[in-house]
Length: 238
Ligand code: MN3
Image (tube, rainbow, N blue to C red; front, side, top):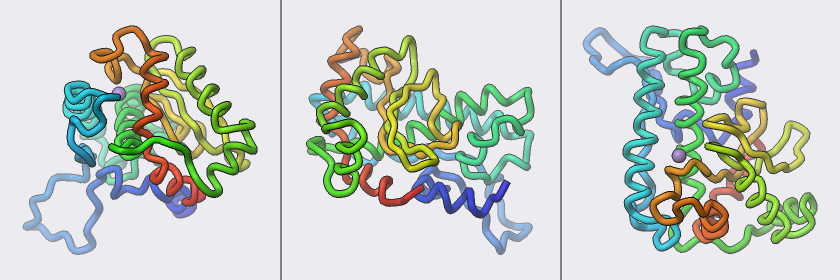
């Protein structure tokens, strides 16, 4: 695989943003840093910052327990495989067939979980919502007919995902925008697409406030969408 091309291609989802410890060129024997591992990125706002749409307790459990567990399980899985350490998470997710079979499902689920949630926190913000601007807005209207039609299709895909999973707006290799839902922690990265905006429809993302009413959560969630971040990802041409 053309690693260089791959790394550039993913642009925004760079190793820094996903907490991969970077290699140092001047490591010496006295350096006691652990082997490159994945780290839990801090939530970029307070736990209660997305209220009333997403409650404080949900954010706290979601970030500090669920996401933290994905990171720990991923690190545990690759602990015996130095060749997998220090790689961007996208590399692991795009090359699952080359991951040793005994940890492949663990990497798929927990590596997917780490990548998805790392993007998810950035894709939300307090005092956000509204509509996208510029090129992204034009592309959404061109692809889906209108912003309202896009939201309706996104919500519908989220409602129809049976069990746990995600709904994503992503960009195909051809450049075309698409909406697709994925089971569990699978993501557009695994099928070579570039994720622009995703919503977590696992019950742990909404149950305390919305209980079984996933459609209400999907509708309310638009109030916290960080379009500035989504526009940045769109411009990254990843
Ligand atoms: Mn989640």
